[in-house]
Image 1 (tube, rainbow, N blue to C red):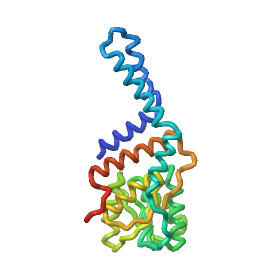
Image 2: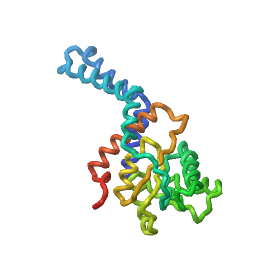
Image 3: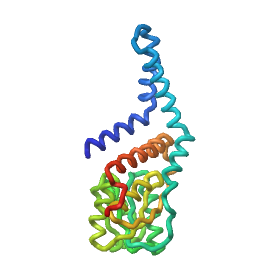
Image 4: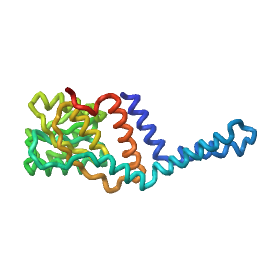
Length: 231
């Protein structure tokens, strides 16, 4: 798991620096011109041009907008019904206060008697922010070990299902919601999704990476059978 997270961070840093992508592709395209006798010259140059076109098409604002819509197209609306618990997933400093605000508003609207925070490095801090908003200790619980969406769902199920919690309001951002919804269902929860807004200062390239990472995550989780309910 540690190696996978390190690899994911490396890919993220690489994607956030376009020079690291465009420079190798430019070399692939230009190499045949620098070495005229190079074998497979046309094939190499054609491959480089195709990869450049794929990169610019994939990262265009239109492609990202369409891909973002695809991630939310199958997510049901919040039905407004009461549930056993509100589960809020951590995402990092930039996302924390907004998610806490949403969770507090839902609790104050009497949607659930309990708020459960999930996520290593986030859960305990979200609990402190919720306490500062006047949410009583008996209405708060958390786990701060999970580092992936699968672990969010698995550890939340370990803690809450033994207490009879089955129906939850799930709080996360729109790109992450579909995978989270299906994963929590896989672990036996009846899930009502409630999306939290993206940070207003989120960099466009970071949003692009999030969207395509979610598609990769859906494929990966689907292959591993994590998106289907247990029998």
